[in-house]
Image (cartoon, rainbow, N blue to C red; front, side, top):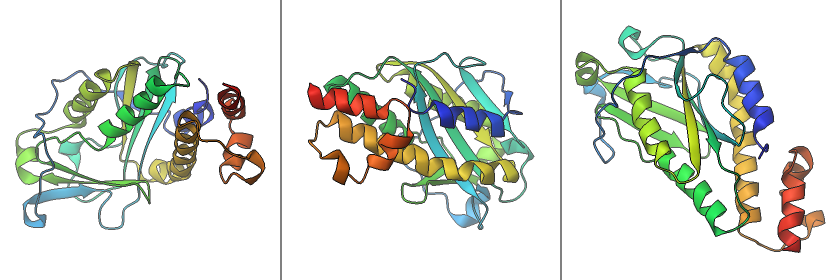
Length: 231
């Protein structure tokens, strides 16, 4: 599947300087959302009006650089104030089938986005603005929290999704790059929404479908849609 490949390539071009982080044990997961009060926070990622973006792309192609956690910009122990933030996920998966299994895979990948709860790392995701803000507690900083450990927690969850072969978690605190990546999020959301629409098997008249522009623009989407309608 190559539906997201153009955006993956654009992301790699913009964040080409990201470095692979050393493998670390996953940061402890609280199992539920934690409330970190402002008075207990060391800083916020994407807070105080700083730009922020979050999106997940899927491909059947091998991931250049392999599976792992990558960082462009300063790591958590180096931060002293609120900063720009992006968390981009690229997943290598099996071919997403045009049946219930394919639909379940998409839902499972979306589920992970909202269900990783690193201790002392309060995540607030906006599905409407495509932003992700994180409030990091002073206690977590004192205990040595870093992106390698937080990323390892995300990797564990994605590895557990049936059909996922490999994952890259890319953290970015470089403001210029975060801003450059922001337009990609809406495109990714449109592709995912259209893909879910197709996998749902909902009949549609393409000439009146609001998702037609996505099918027209994204390579392979129209073929998948037409194939689904025939079946």
